[in-house]
Amino acid sequence: MKKKIRFSLVYRDMWQSSGKFQPRKDQLARIAPVIIDMGCFARVETNGGAFEQVNLLAGENPNEAVRAFCKPFNEVGIQTHMLDRGLNALRMYPVPDDVRQLMYKVKKAQGTDITRIFCGLNDTRNIIPSIKWAKEAGMIPQATLCITTSPIHTAEYYSAIADELIAAGAEEICLKDMAGIGQPALLGKLTKLIKTNHPDIIIQYHGHSGPGLSMASVLEVCNNGADIIDTAIEPLSWGKVHPDIISVQSMLKNEGFDVPEINMNAYMQARALTQEFIDDWLGYFINPANKLMSSLLLGCGLPGGMMGSMMADLGGIYNAINKLRVKKGEAELSMDDMLVKLFNEVEYVWPRVGYPPLVTPFSQYTKNIALMNLLTIEQGKGRYVMMDDAMWGMILGKSGKIPGEIAPELKELAVKQKREFTDVDPHTLLDNALDGFRKEMKDNGWECGQDDEELFELAMHPEQYRIYKSGMAKKNFLADLQKAKDAKLGTKLSVEELAAFKHAKADALTAPVAGQVYYEFSGEGACEPCLEPFVGQRYKEGDTYCYIQAPWGEIVPIPAALGGKLVEVAAKQGAKVRRGDNLGWIERDQ
Image 1 (cartoon, one colour):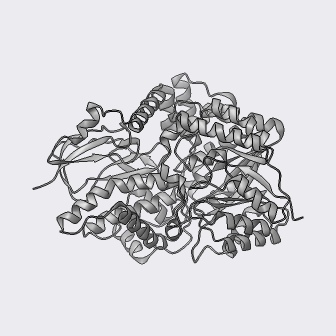
Image 2 (cartoon, one colour):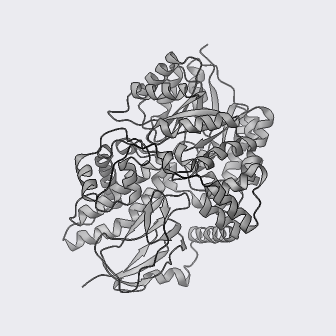
Image 3 (cartoon, helix red, strand yellow):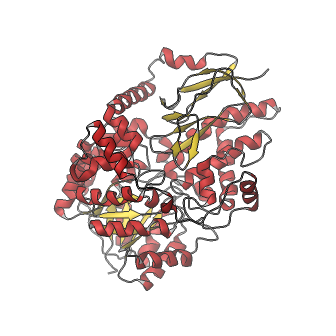
C-alpha cells in the first residue's frame, strides 16, 4: 500500500467560492459534530478570507462564530486552519504590522491551529513576517505558493520560493491552485522537488474545480509525495468550488493509497444540513453560475470564485458598449460575445502587467483593467485609460514584487502620469494603528473583548465593524434578504424600484454589486470622503461616475455611461446600495 493521505474539509471556502455569505454561528455549531462523525477529516477550515466581513455585515459577531465552530474540532483533535492574505491579512488591502501580529494571538485563542499565509504575488517579504508572528502565537505557519500557469511560473521557480519560506520557519507548504489552472504535470513535479529537498515538510494541495483539472492534479501531487488534500462535500462541491470527498477518496483508494473511510450516514446528514442552510437563506446569495465548471477559465486564468462578481461587473458596462456600437452602426454583442471579449482582454493584459497570479486582490485588479479597456477601446480611446490608484499600485510594486516584466507601454504611461515604480518592502509603508483603534473603542464605550478579539475586529474591518455595532448591519441584511426572496418569488416591484425607469431621456446608472458609494478613490484600498457630484455636472464617455466598495472590500469603478449631463444623484456619498440600485441619471447630449 502507498503512503497515508489525509483529508481536509474546506467548509468555509465552499461557501466563499459559491457566494459572499457564510452560515450563522448556530448553523456552524450544528454541522460541526456531523463533520466529526464523517470520520474522514484530519483538518477543517474554520475561518479566513471574507468570513469575518460577511458575518459582520449580516449582523453577527464573527469571533463568536469562529469559537463555536472551532471548539468541537479542538475537543476531538481535528486540526483547524484558516486562510490569511499575508500583507492584507483578512481583507482586500494592506494591514499594519501591529494589527497583523495581533491576529495570530486572537485566532490561536479562538481555537485555530494552522494559518495558511499567502501573498498573491508570491513575494516572500509579505509572508515571512507572518510566519514569525504565527509561531510566536503558538500557531502552525503554513506558507503558501499561489499556483498559476505562465512562462515564469515553473516548478523550479516555485521550489526556490518554498526553500526560502521553509528557511524562514514555515512548517508546512500549501499549493494553492486557486483558479484550478495549475497543470497536473507541473504540480506533480513541484511536489517532488519540495519533498526531495525537504522530506519532513507537510504538503497540502488546494485546488478548485473550475476548469476541470483538479482531480488529475490531486492524483499527481499524491503520487509525488503530497500529504493532505483539500476537499468539499455536496451540495457545494464541484462547480467553481472543490472536488467532493467521495470522489477523491475513491480515486486515491483505488490508486493504492492509505485513505480513511467515510461514514456515509454522516455524509448524507452533512449534505442535508448544508442544503438546509442554502434553502434557509444562503441560497438567495449564491450565483447559480458558480455551480458550473467552465473550461473557458483555462485561457484567462481567473479564479472561479470571482465569476459571480465579474459577471455583475460585465453587466454594468454591457449596455454602454452596445449603445456605442449601435451609434456607430455596428451589431450589438450578446453577453456570451462580451464574456469572450473579456476573457481575451484578460489574456492580453495579464502578461503586460507582469503575470501576477490571479488571486485576491490581483485577480480583481487585472479583471478591472481588462473590463475598463473593453469600454475605452469601444470609445476609440485605446487601453489603460481608466485605471485607478489600486490598479496602478499593483503595477508600480506597492503591493510587492511583480513576477514578470511590466510592458513598455505601461512604463511609458507611468512616466507620463508622473507615477514612480518602487521596490520597497510593502509592509514598511504602513504605520502601526492599534493605539488609535483602542482609543476609538474606549471613546465609544466598547469592550476590547476576550483576548482583545473585538479590538482586532475593529482594526481589521473598521467599516464593517462600525456598521455592525450601530445595529444597521442586521437591518440592512434583513432588507437585502427580503428583496432577494421577493425577486425569487416574483413579488411585484416596489415604487422605489420602478423609479429606475423614469427619466426617459437619461441613462440610469445602476450598481452592479452591493456596497458603499464613494465619489473619490485614493487607491491602496482606501476610499475618501469628498463632495458629491452636482446636478448639471458634465461627463465624457467613459469617465468614472463613482466607485462602489463591495462588502468584501473590492473596489468597482462605475463608468458614466455614454457621458452627458447629470440630471439626478440617487446615491449619496457613503450610501449603502444593493445590486441593481440606481446611482444617478445622466442625460445624453442630443
